[in-house]
Length: 151
Length: 374
Image (tube, rainbow over all chains, first blue to last red; front, side, top):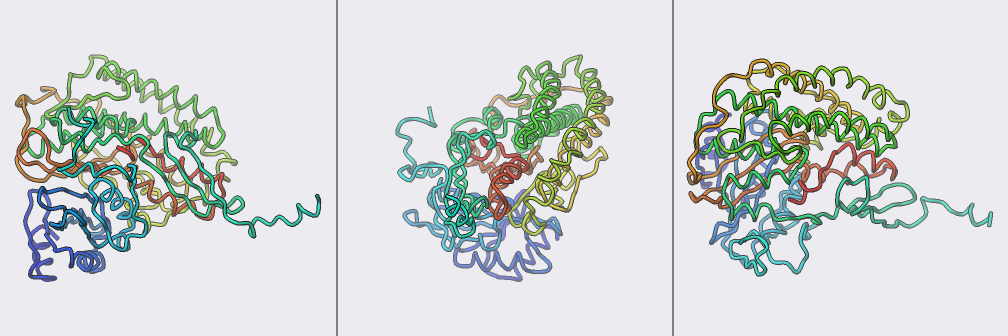
C-alpha cells in the first residue's frame, strides 16, 4: 500500500485517530489507551502485516513525553509511524508492546532508562545503561550538574 | 571419595551464576554477561551493558550536524564510514540537495571497503574465539591493506570521518584506484585460503553446525538484521530494499541462507566479502568526473520536521532518526543501532547449549560494544 491507501486503511480501523502525511512516512497519532490494540491489529491484519518494529524512540516534546514507533511490513514493504504522548511528566505510562514485537523489550528498557517512561506489562523493566540514582538525561529539563555533556 | 563422585549428577544440582566479563576476551569489549548454569548447560543469560555509555544521543542535541559525524565514528568503529554516511544522507535528504554521481560512487566504494575490513576482523577474532589463532594473523594481515588505502585517501585509518554533509572531505588520492584494484586482485586469491583454514575444518563444523538456531519468525520479531538476520533467511538488506548512494545502478545479490545456525551466519559473511568485491569492481573503473563536495552553507539548519534514514552497516540496519525544530542543533537524535538490537536475541538462542557454545554464538553475532552503549 502507498501512503494514501495506508491512510485510508488506518481511518477504516478507527475514525478518531489523527493521521498526518509526513515528508517520508505516514504518521498516526494514537491516545495511550488505544495503543496496544492498534499495534496488535496492525501486526495481525492480513492486508497490513506490520511484523517488523525497526525503531522505537522515546521523545521529550517539551510539555509532553511520547514514544514513536516505526513499523515496517517485511511482506509489503510499507512503513507507518505511530506516535503516542502523555502530559503526565511525573509518572508517564504506556502499554508495553513487547508481547507483540519481542524487539521492543530492549528498546523500551532504553526509553525507561533515558527518559523515565514506564511501560506496563513489560517483562523486565530495569535501568539499562545508567545507575538507578541517575536522573533521566534525555529529558529537556534534565540538569547537567557537572557539565558532562554541554559546554 | 569414590562414593562421593558417583553421587554428582549435574541435572540435580542447583543453578549457579557466574559472571562473564566485563573484561572477558571473547566478549570483544566491555560487555558483562551474567550466566546461569546448570552443570555445563546455559539456562539464562542476562547482559549488563552501559560500561562505556557516553550519551551520544544527548551530546548530539548540543552540537551541529557536521560535528555529529565525528561522534558516529565512535559508535560502531568498524563501520565508521557507513555510520557517517547515514547522518550525511539524512541531512542531505532534509535539505533536498542533489548529490553528484562522483560522490555517490566514492561513498559506495568506501562503504564496501569498510564492510570487507569489518568482516575480516570479525573472521579473525571469530577464529581466535574458537581456538584457531592463525585466523587472527591472517585476518589482520589482510585488513591492514585496506587500512592503508583509507590512510592515503582519508588521513585516518579506522575512524575515518571522511564523509561530510554535501560530499566527502577530500578528493580521492591519485593512487586510490590502482591500490583498490591491486587489493581486489590480491584478496580474490587469499579468500579461498580462509575457507581452507576454517570453513572446511571438521572441528569448526562440529562447533558451529546446529548451534544457536534462530528461526525466521524470531529473527523478524526480534528485529535481527544484517548477516545475522540473513543467515536465518530474513531478507533485510537495505542496499536492496531501499537503495541509497550508488547501489541502485549496480547488480549484486543479497546473500541469504536459511538454516539460521552459527555456521550459516559465518558463511553469510564470507559470501558477503565476495559480493562486496563484485560491487567495487563494477564501480572502481568508472568513477565519474565532477566535484567531490557540494558547497554547503557554513551553518546547516534543517527545516522543521522528522527525518529517518536507514543504511546497511557491516552488522545490520542502522537507522538515524532526526527531529529538527529548525535550529542548527537537532532537537532529538535517535540511533537505531544494529548491535543493540542483535544483543537482545543472545539469551533466546543460547538457552540449552553448553558454555563453550556461548562463545561461538557470541562470536557469530559479531557484537561491537560501543555501538550497543552509544
